[in-house]
View 1 (cartoon, rainbow, N blue to C red):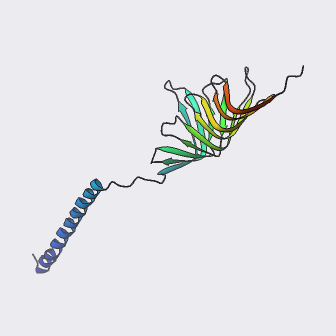
View 2 (cartoon, one colour; view 1 turned 90 degrees about the vertical axis):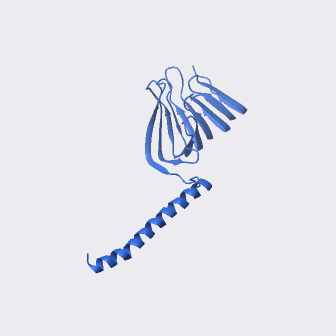
View 3 (cartoon, rainbow, N blue to C red; view 1 turned 180 degrees about the horizontal axis):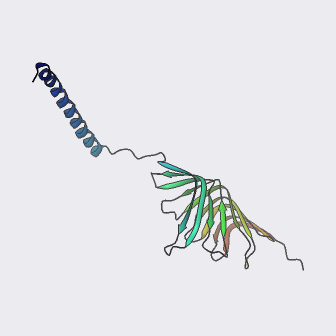
Length: 193
């Protein structure tokens, strides 16, 4: 072996050992710190989807409802989703389809609660057994699996011949029952014969 190679090896060997020892010491200290001080929880959304659309299926594989929006962000703290300009459509019952729109929404981790905020509009077109209905409010909680909507805010319900206003509402789309809880006022126009 040539003398310059021996000198190079003698110079590099301690540096390589020192680098490996530094890396080993760093890993030991990092692992010890992680067990003593847990890493902070993420507070920022970890992903987003633009112009999304999905259909929730029942256990039997039939379509229950459709959700679409301009932007959906995932919040890792509570595994919830924020949606900009959401559109929720009930497609479970072809006889009573319903569409709800709002400016924003928050959906919980298991999709069982959809909180809709600002300019909430629910529309159900006329069917063979029911006239069209429109609901307007500033907040609505939708329980899509139960086909139920709730609000504790002022609400306006209109049909072709009636208009109801009140504060607080529970509505069941499956049974077509509405319950206004307070400050209820209404007008009804009789059919002209």
